[in-house]
Amino acid sequence: MAIAMPVGIAAIPIGAIFGALAVQKGLSPLEATLMSLLVFAGASQFVAIDIWQQPVPWLLLGVTALTVNLRHVMMSASIGRHFQHFGPVERWIYLFFLTDEVWAFCEKRAMRAPLYPAYFAGIAFVLVVSWSGWTAAGALLGAAMGSAERYGLDFVFTALFVGLLVGFWKGPRTGIVMGTSGVAAAIAHEAIAGPWYILIGGLAGTAAGALMLAPTRQQEQPS
Amino acid sequence: MSVDPQALLAILAMAVATYLTRIAGLVVLRYVSLTPRVRAALDALPVAVLTAVVTPALFLTGPAETAAGLITIAAAFRLPLLATIVVGAVSIIAMRWLLG
Image 1 (cartoon, helix red, strand yellow):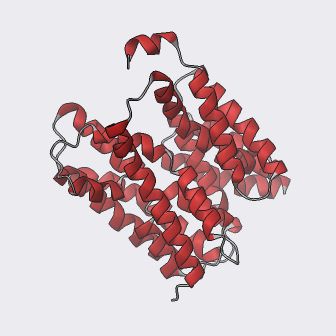
Image 2 (image 1 turned 60 degrees about the horizontal axis):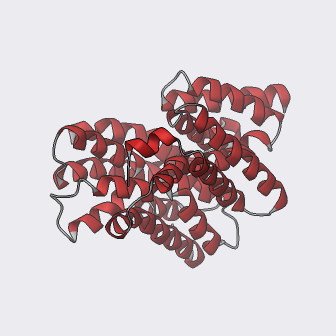
């Protein structure tokens, strides 16, 4: 559990900011906390409150969460290779807690030692408690805080995504994926109401990534 | 303290959708052998989705957002995630005061 502390501490400001932003978009503190507990995926939660309105577009929110969290498919396929010590039912329960952070820690662990459920559980427990606890705290404080724009908090999730994106940088190919996705998203954003630009930009960038398949990569990973 | 039924429905829809993405890889791993092209697509997907999320917020919202966005991008190359977020928040306040 001590290994997981940085994850728990890192979740404090983001969790609190999420809670504060959520109440300013009209969610109750309980609704915000429930979302952190049940969805437990920061990026999609920030996108959801960005497009949150009355009446609540639940289907659109579900589809958007699916789109934003499609990266989990890759993470799940990747971490699934290290599940030898997980029971047949246990693995489906643990996967509920597969966030970017839990995944990154477990992948790192699996590089030098077998991955045991206790390790996964320790990281996941610290993160889920910190994330939903600080969502609740932020939601309760945020209600008394006034406008989010006054504190620059409305821009925080954009900054968070920018920071994450830079971490994904692997060279010019990444730039081509970003360029394709960005242009497609911008056009879609101007042309279509609602957050469909995320799906359209995401698919365009993913297609660009698939089309740029390098010959060297094919030699490295024959299928 | 209340939970609106529509809000709860939205949260449950998000939770189910997110859980499906979290188990899909394990299911896919059992039945599909990933070709190099599919791997390349999956490699590009997180970047593509995140870029699509931020592009309108950075470049289609207003001059203050674009200026603060460029500062944030520069900060992201040098600073850890939390510091980048702080730079983003401070720069949007400053740019809205200067340009807004």
